[in-house]
Length: 230
Image (tube, rainbow, N blue to C red):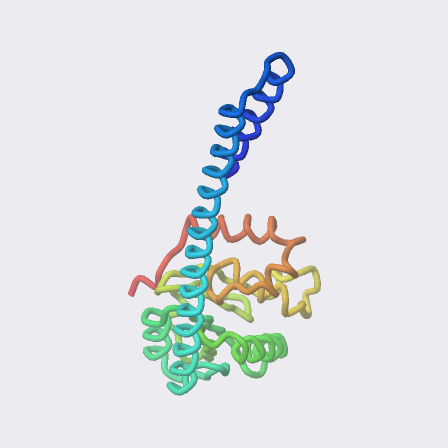
């Protein structure tokens, strides 16, 4: 559309320059009016096409929203979403991490204060991100995973997507300078950038300052994504 307007502007300017030096007859004026009418009709057709595109885009987005809401409803009804679920069996934890599209698993000790703190944050996120499954497992019940993941420091949190590890947190070091706590938005932003929870406008709005840092961290992780290799 802009190209057509530019060409029309050029023609108008060119013709105006010629008019200064020549006498314009009625045929030339008619021709100019016809060119303008043709351009306006063409632009009108393009606007109709744009309207059709926007309508199609709107319909597509509505369908995506509808599908998302149906998936959320199904997830909640399946009773595995919307809360931080305690998994007692190591085999069940492995199956969830390998078979679930998006999952965050916290390897913990309930008696450890920092693990309790992490559980509170994950419980909060679980209620808001109903397409990601949040689970916790006692490290004493999963010796294979403790050895496999080389777990030595708690809390130890891993985010998986389609069975691939996308991000991990050892203690609170990735989540700020306070060794005893962190702003939940930092964890939320990091999980979103890793693709483990659905990104939202609210997250993007709050993450503008930290985008470069998180992008760098997650780029390093993405180059070495690994599954449980079981």
